[in-house]
Image 1 (cartoon, rainbow, N blue to C red):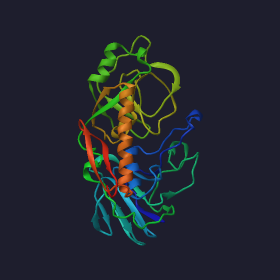
Image 2 (image 1 turned 120 degrees about the vertical axis):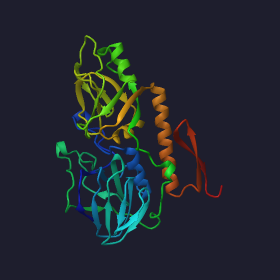
Image 3 (image 1 turned 90 degrees about the vertical axis):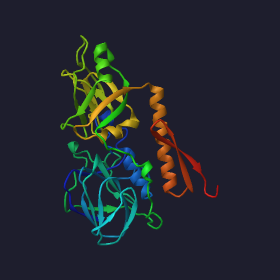
Image 4 (image 1 turned 30 degrees about the vertical axis):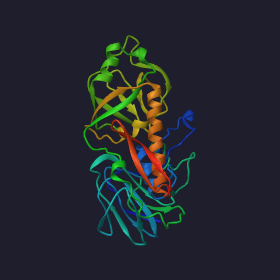
Length: 334
């Protein structure tokens, strides 16, 4: 069990989200940055979809009431019993130990994973918090959480090489999108504005959607409104003011604004980690390119999981452009 001593910002339990309930109006929810969250779980020997703690900007202070192995994903200072330790590594904590998680230097969301995951009652197949519908609630100081059973030996001391850690520094992003499906609601110039101009993440952004400021996107004579139709995380709606809104993990399941594009799955984590003030340029890709980018991302994550689990002796990184997308696997003894 762990006890939360200080909770300075939004802190929730999240897993990979609710699947199969969007038709009933229930959002997916789950990790805002599934890339970092999955790595945090791999560091402690969990499946990638295990429940963990997600914090916004500033992390909690917590006490361990039993031995545990944990890892923190994020560009953040950590202390265990007052002594500095490293993120992106798994550490052993004993009963009575206190972990202090500082404020993220870059990015917006950080993750704390525990070997065995967090034991919680699943609501509609998931432990993810969706507070708008009272599916779980944000955590507060004094809360206690029970950890799942895990064999701890051999799970401490795992470390992710710095070259493989996601980099969320900087104030500019290129986010790739698939154009459509409601392009007839936009002028040709409006579509051109969307993929050529720079937009800024506004402070009104949250887990439900990220709002952007920048040049207005022109609608055609059909206007901004459509007959309400399904929404998915990543969908880019453009209301009458011409300013795009990207749906995120807690987004509603239907909407009545025309959609100019959808952010590709492999880039949603990069957008999620963009703070207010971040400048974003949207780049159009086709379906085949989006699928290939996602395959590369998944291949990298699978290789990271295998390496951290000791199924590789070593690795080499191949790069395509500026993307680290694949490992060359070297089997033990090979």
